[in-house]
Image (cartoon, rainbow over all chains, first blue to last red; front, side):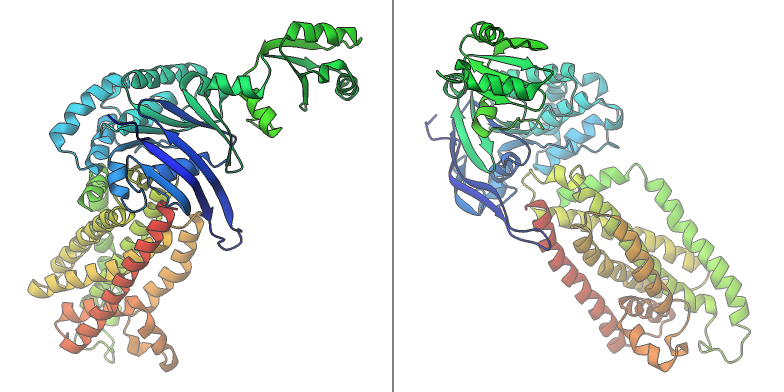
Length: 318
Length: 253
């Protein structure tokens, strides 16, 4: 095993040319990153940040338009089929065939990789267990719940025993329980040594699953590091969330106060005010000392959501 | 290409019985209703421009070519647009080693299979009605498959880039149906006014209908057959070339 990165991008760029009424669009604008074997690497950012486009370039289904990209030592533009043969991809939409059974979906996907029937049959059995879909193996996909379909899509992507698994928004649209089941499955894959790349706009997902993250906005990388590093570097230890009846007046008073100096910071959102402070309780006491009486006050640990807010001045989920 | 084909075949296994019924019932009803029914009126006219041939024998191969076009159009528009949509079958195949050209090839192979089976059912019904026979029937079948395929590849090239499937119905209504009616399917082109005839010659289905009719009636000449088949083949090849580009653009943006 070597230390060469599994995926390495330098100045990676994707520009969609102008077509018809739509102008030229720079979806990814010169990004650098390197992915090591066995790690879980996340792209965090709002919709339209360029995450999915980056994933498509890595998975050799969208040619790059600038910079360099190596995936498993291959050039994904010139050697697309070789790259795709060794990756697993879980797209944003499941694109399962609903009229076919669970087993048939696995079978047909294995055939796309040119695997022999016997090999597919053997792998399908263990994947059915992995995805906890043994009872449903001969049911049509139509009858499965959203969470089950997602697990089937992940099982399907493992049929070629990929070296890297790419997941685009793996838990978007799932209920909390289904999300936890899915995280558990992904965590097991990670334990088994599968390298994961995922995109998400959920900070809890990124914190749960990712060893390392890049935060993207407008096609660029605005920060990178471990979740802990990002929080330490870009925000305070704690956050005080306040709601007021008259938010404008309150925010004005807070801005003029000592809370906004000395490392403290204020972020005004449409429905609440966030005070960044290393000691949230002390900040709350200071708020009361200003004779402000918030409707609600909550002290919590800073999260990646705050990192994003600090870096871009915008919330991750609009 | 075979890998892509096997998906469509596996999916087709669920519905093939229904399509076989349609493939047989459709020509049966048309040949009975139009061929025999209207034929009864037409064949009594002494000055018929199709003299010497029963209307049934004249009409059936034209209808076969038109039906082949219709099957090809429907198979290669709605299903292609569905498969190319974000949740469609092509999207499942795109991250695998298959290239967009192979995904196209697999689907065209399946469409050719559907055209061939439904045209074979039609031809069989024609033989049962005595509208054609023997080697002529087999040659006619070949002409019908070529006619269908000439429409399939260009339709797929167009449909793969569609975001709104409503257009598929509009094109069916305003392009396919008029072609169905004015390509010498139900009548001889010689019956059209002089100024309208050149328009008919430009319609691809005219060449398909003529090809099938002359092969079926045994009146085909080498030169005319080569011309008709050549035009259809050119259309098919141009369609494949365009589809390869369109598939790559849509699946590997």
